[in-house]
Amino acid sequence: MKKTIGPPAQDLIGDVIRPFKRINDKPEAAALNEVLRALRAHPDVLWAERQNTGAVRVGGRFIRFGWPGCSDVIGQLRDGRFLAVEVKAAKGRVSTEQTAFIDLVNAGKGVAFIAHDCRDVLRGLGVGGQNP
Image 1: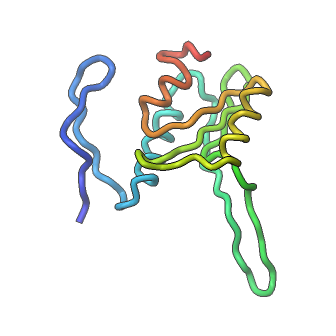
Image 2: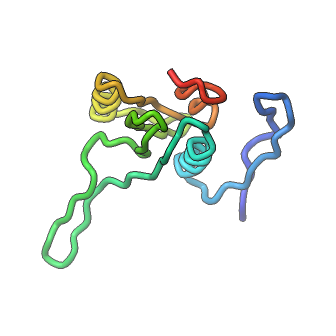
């Protein structure tokens, strides 16, 4: 059974937004889907992709991909800057490693922030192509 999230909301212009159907019951997966869509539609974003991290045992080998603290989404802005977005559900917590990575990207003149939904993307990148 598919669920919807809350009552209709308004977008930045004031038009009513119909609630979207969740793909699954994992709040962070729903947030990730919304954030990726917002990033890919933003005029300042050249590309943005999901960055999986973790480890798996294949046969007798242990294979790690990504690194601790790496943001959920990495990409590039049209002006060449690196983009990193850590996606969290409403009650999600940011780890020490994730905070350190966000700080590292921002210190290196990239753009990195935490996003719970599309509004955080607009705050992090600026509305209508006026990124910080």
